[in-house]
Image (cartoon, rainbow, N blue to C red; front, top):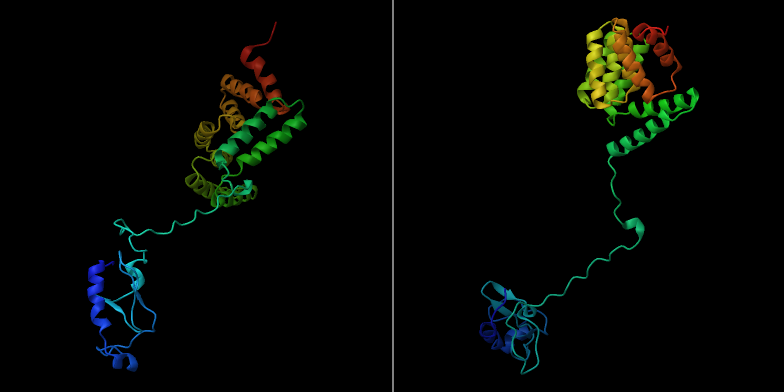
Length: 271
């Protein structure tokens, strides 16, 4: 808290009349110990007043630091009426090096979609089955990662259970997978496969429908749907599905053979 010049001076005057014996004894008339000599009373609008050794300026709440009363000014200078000036804090240096500049954050889902789009273009343009298998394998590896460590671990255990023909365990694990990651197409696809292996055709078709809503280009799920439709005697619908699969992944000799077999049965033989 700052004091006006008159108030600070009036508070200091009684201390200016402290007896010399008190100075010699190192205490004030009130019995308080006196500080080291050299205190200066600075009153706005007046030249600095050198106080006797040990003199302190007192305010209503006790001793006041003389420096808090403001710096001394030359005679004739108008008193300041505004707030005390404070030193401006230097601005932190702005990094100019490229490595300090913020980099754009690319969402994993966006990056994943771009990778898949490029792979599907290459898959459709593949000139032989070996090239197609390599690209299809890359796509399946992307599909197999959910982005959740928990879901990926459960999926790994479910695949192991299927290989061991422990279908109850596989289905239990896959139920948890689709509950944790309902937007992961491969979770539904793997459960559709497990359901088909246990003769739960309706459940498998329901899961395939979920897969295709998330990833319409899922050639594995589409092929599974085609097999189920053919098994149920719906050859015309199965043929449509298999033809669609070949527009996505042309390099599948086995699917081409199925199409060649179904065409005459569905559309008749040329005379």
